[in-house]
Length: 183
Image 1 (cartoon, helix red, strand yellow):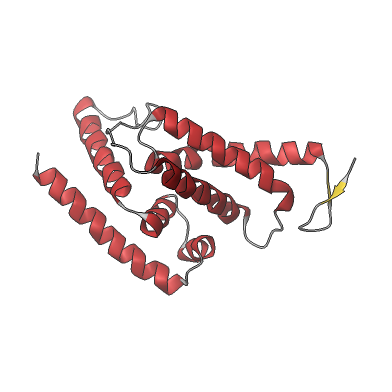
Image 2 (tube, rainbow, N blue to C red; image 1 turned 90 degrees about the vertical axis):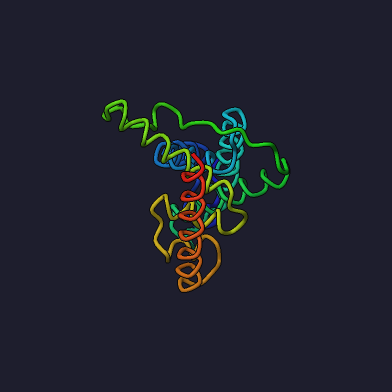
């Protein structure tokens, strides 16, 4: 049975829903998995968060009206779920974990790969140290969203985004300098 798709009045049946959902997961799986890495230190928690995000996308898909790009819509859902999950789980003791093997470059020699792994670990630790909107903005920025897309996702002006990004980059650099200096 066909139902009206709220966004355009187009027919939106179960097959369309499934096809669109599968395409979205294919297109956004790695960015969403990287996003979970910023919010959850443990692999099991990241997998749970990823499942919550995909379920939310599935449930929201019939209501997608196309007022924003699909990309910003997906990231808005993902970050709302990640923030809610963070609040639900509260502050847990964070144990550092390294990126999954499929994300780490295999083309580097062992010494260069070790250095890259350490830099990546420090960046992840620095991003995890951020809270709220600052974390959301930098994670989306690292995923390549423009200031305009960032503004659309988080509800700020492009000028406010630029100011926050500048401040957050400075905070991250200072965090990394401090941690690297302790070694």
